Length: 488
Image 1 (cartoon, one colour):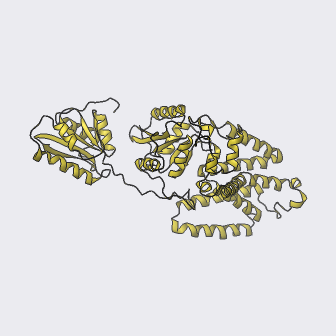
Image 2 (cartoon, one colour; image 1 turned 120 degrees about the vertical axis):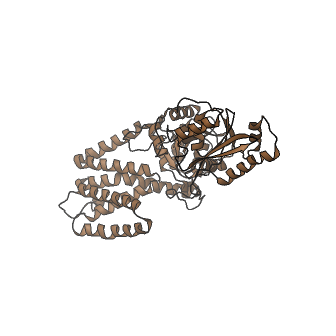
């Protein structure tokens, strides 16, 4: 339906169009209510399941009462407009809009002899109430989170930012799904070039539908390919999204998705968590350092231990006890791979296991499988220890996408170390850093502010500063207004 077709004055033609193109009379959830008002036909089209029935009944009552209070008039269209008891009433002029609005959950009112129609937003999408996201829990803080309704999600953001310059621009993406996608930003803060690029890319998306919602949008916008490292940050917390909007980021909301996309982002955005900002700066800094240690351990602990196991002479005498004390028939690198992939089996199994059974499954895996594997000689005990520490480091990573990417990088480093020992570790580590340096998200360096180095911004990464001390916004988003607070 790329060609725009004007609304015909004949209601029979509209009805025929709806039957042929949309399935009126075939689809049980698509219906039409026909009224006679001041001797003229009026048709109301709606989609069951996406409308609030109470509002429809009120509107029909108001329209029927026109016959009791008005005389015959040539201005029926204006009379109906005044009688529509709803705050969201608009006019449309094409059948394309007519169909789109009906399928989006609005009701459309067509009047005989008119080439315009009314749309009334009485949508009531099925969904859940806002609740705390499972992957972003905090000890203290708000318990509301985004849901699958884009209107609710923008409202949760608007509740936290009551600025007249906050904008939500809506797009329809998908030739068949026509999914609502919105970008949120503050007009006098966000970079206009970034906003322009995102608008252009969203309008250029050509696909049947967004069944995977925000993930599909991400793949079109950022063209990540097989790079496992996330180029955007997802969040389901409304307070996190609002914080980034105030910093100058642009947020992408996609209908049917409970998470939003934060752009642009660096690797350090994936290492932040709301819990750090719900505690005092000292406690927040401590939590952040512990998290950094966990993430570093998830990446480099196993390759380093394998290197020491293969070349014990590298160890100082005081820690020479590190390394396998038992000989087995299975090479150490194979044991590491088996144990690491085994933990991945458990993670995937936990996702697909009903909640009441997942705890029991975890106990069985930890107590029986691990211990028996050691007893029969499949693994040495140190392999289980270090693989478990690395796995815990993965779970310390706030971003699920980053934790999986780190696991893939760790397995690649293990292979290189097993093949080339010390030179392999040095070369592998160097290539890994160079690879991260070359990653860019919307022309944003992935390792900023570490590379290119920005002392002030890097200090804020290492130390959780108090809100009162954070005067400027991150320069990486190119904010139009650099200062969060008035400069004294």
